[in-house]
Image 1: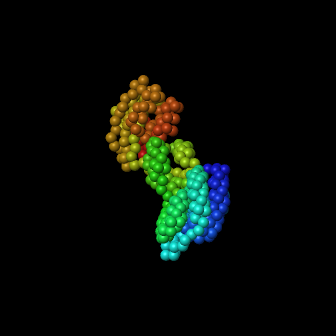
Image 2: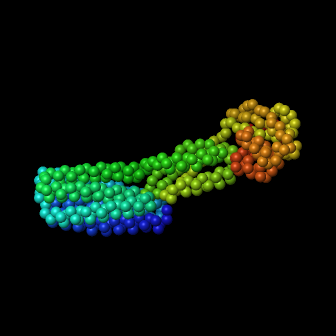
Image 3: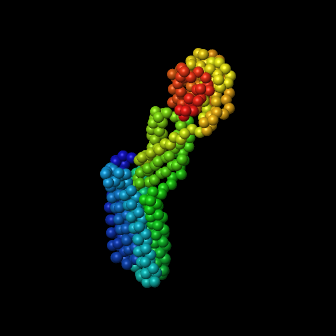
Length: 402
């Protein structure tokens, strides 16, 4: 994610601060002039939200700072900390409104200039809908938890605004207790939303984060490379502010070469980071275990057992002897004859692929076939030593080396 996108989030947050300050001030003045407790409580909630959005703005601004000597992973978690501050602010406001609501319930007062209060409240509802959409859009664009939390707070403004309208109407009709009851319900709803947001922010700060869809997509990428990656031992993701950091521990095919591993893992890393613009870094840790069982293909020119003569060239190859090895002990073996037509790169590659071999003795293979088997199928290709003539001696040499 580039700096320009983060600046867009900052701009949206700053505009939200200005709008909330103006709106909160107007509500407070109206509440004091009309004597309506529910309007004053709503104004207090607006000011608390202003502090929350300011924390969001500050968090986004600081999170753009590059990593340094003291903060090697960057400042991204400050944005999540800002979201926690917002959530705590929402909870505090909810408690304050609840206290004022209880007082209004036991000591109901008749308001004045109710039409003025109704007009301002309707304007505030329309404004809250517009600001909520703007903050949510910006929050999703920059993957900002604090902006999204602020947008949810503005959605609550709409609900509480409607409740305020009901309270003012009840006050106008001289219906007691409605103002206190409605204000209490608003406060309980606000406290609930604040607790849920605080819980989410706290979990993110403690590196708890779960995105099953993203995990599923990452594992699907690894599964496509079944020739190289035997299994994914562990996959971890964590959220830091706007960004996602991850790591995977994978078990690698023991017959893959270092050059294959380096190239393939770089490609996999690139594919994973393309899944989401918010993936800041994804590390792949590989573990190569010693192969306990494998299958060898040895070209032979004569013979039908382990004493068969090894063919040094493809021209003199009459068959391939396939032998299974498990825990350094020879298992069953069999011989498969090949004809002149089978010696073309395409046909021979299909034959060897079908046998699912791990090791092949080189008999001056075609360069394309060699590349396909070594780099694509990750088959380990050993040279044909001139002083090793039989299959049995070749296998013994392989066992020493592997």
